[in-house]
Length: 484
View 1 (cartoon, rainbow, N blue to C red):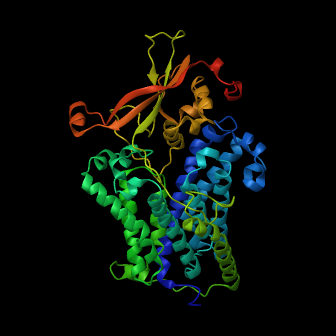
View 2: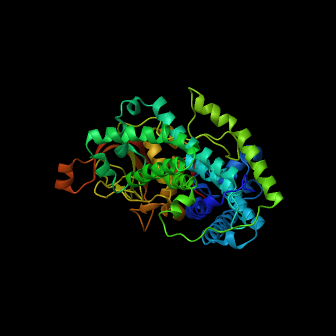
């Protein structure tokens, strides 16, 4: 069955599957830790309200059949347990059919969460995890060598991730064509990391070289994934290096790590065996006929669904991070088709004074990841995903992005809602809720080297305008007020 499987990729599959299980584990931990506050029955955008207006066929999910915070928690913790088991190698200790069923259950559980997650789950890496997780169902386990067709489908997915991102840049913001986008990006990206300040202050010629290298890595190198070995492995290695550079420069959830895993799946293990002290590859039995049939059917499905993303790549109106079907299979990807030239941050404040005067003392709420206190160094959170922090970045770009959830957030803060406060780093009112909450819009920029040395601050900020005037709980729309 040499046409169907390839023993040379046993190591690549092992690393890919264990890594994917780790990403799933993080994704389910995020859901368990943040789901109740964001989409729970009393969350900012409750699931029951969503499923009441969106039919199952448009957003298939277990939670259309039943929703409660307890049931959501059971599904989330089941995903955590199953991910941990697969990470520990359980799939290689059970029959092939059982291993495939385990990966399928993971995919179904996460699909159910994403499809009711609303704005909190509208990021490209959610669809990427689902598409990658779907392909993992058919990659098999130690009972059989990796199927060649699925390995090629993983490369097709990686190609769309990289090539789509490259095209959207070239077609989008002129600064990508002028090689100047990194003059701004490290400072204005959604959630800078601990090294972003240093990346921002690299010499401008190096920034231009970074952009040029990015274009090569995303528009030229992916084509080489479809060439014979060892060229395909070299191309995969280049993609891994560029993704590690992105990991170091910012926080992009598990996007970069998933891309790295996809790239590693294209590496021929026989090449690695030539430079690493690896054990002898296993000699699995021939794949069963039913397994061959299932893989062929999955391949045919992906090929049919590939029509829409392939057409999108060729379109002058390319869509970015878009799913053409509610199962999030064979999607289109891309990031930063436009780059902000400045950073606007929404800062939420509260006061316990009953009467507002010009002398009123306002205290800031601190978020875990997004910029707030100018003296606090940006933190590394990825691959963990701080969903509220990311949406606050979008709110700073335009209030329209906050239309569905900002008023409920303010209402939660006005009653010190315990689940919501767990999403924050600091609540300035630990003993009793504030009487008023407001939000201010600031212009943030990284300090210069001289400013950093003199003040110890990582950021400099300037007040721009009022984002939300002071409100009391009575002023909040009754539909957004928490139930007492």
